[in-house]
Image (cartoon, rainbow over all chains, first blue to last red; front, top):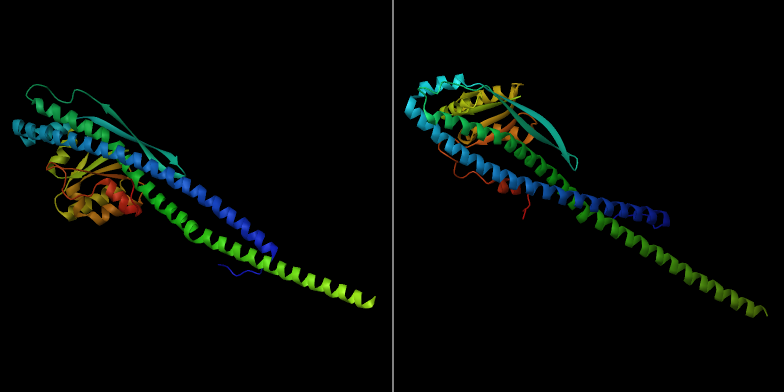
Amino acid sequence: MRQLAPTRTNLLKVSAELNFARLGYELLDQKRNILILELMSLIDQATQHQDAIEKLLTEAYKSLEQSVTAMGRSRVRSLATAVHIDSRIAFRRRKVMGVSLPVVETEFQEFRPYFSLEGTSFHIDEALSRFKAALEMMGKLAELKVSITRLAGEIKKTVRKVNALEKIAIPDLAETKVNLENRLEETERDMFVLMKMVKRQLLEKRREDQ
Amino acid sequence: MKYFVIGDEDTTLGFSLAGVAGERVETSAEAENAFDRAVTEKEIGIILITERIAELIRPKVDRYLFTRDFPLIVEIPDRLGKMPGRPELREMVNQAIGMKLS
């Protein structure tokens, strides 16, 4: 509670401050809820993506292993150097409640065919397309993960502000306001009694005079 | 901008089939070197790093993950599959913001 002189001006000031704090609290509370909703949907998406990528990669590694078994590691390595796929990542940003989040777009430019079909295993083709599929999802996963860490940070900050307002600032102001009101009323009652006494004395004096 | 892979032999070989450049590392010193070089490279937008390698230089990776804008870092499972004991995404977030999401 703040110690303020019990005047009407101070009461008005504290009331205005209290209203402002309540408004800020409401807005921040809304912001927190929106951010949490956004975060939860991002987490769901990210988990799905992660699972999908894990599955794809497991398959891709299997195909790779098979092609290595079929053709030998050095052959696979030399074929890999022949593959010509250009991946280009473009970043944009989007904003959620003032938090800037990245949006990743990946573009693939392929220059097929990469190698002769003759003398190469079927598995290597399979491995290639699986790794490429995994890569395509990777950009999205990166976007989601980074968005999640940023949003989590922002939520942490917002929660701290909301709590500070809810648990400290608003109760403190409310208490100060009540206290000011009480003291003002007390002085008012004092004045009232005082006036009554003055009036009675005046009346008595007048009666004595008559 | 481009992707870049840091991982073991199979991972780098696999992704090179998809046209992604990478660096094969085995020790934590090599990993650190490769990571440092990759993050300073302007052309690299997303770094894919296998969980096992990332675990070797965990403090460094986490510091980048949580503070820097670019490049983005994604951890991927390697040939041996997902590492056991890695916390779920949701748990990590719960921990980070210190409250439970339903």
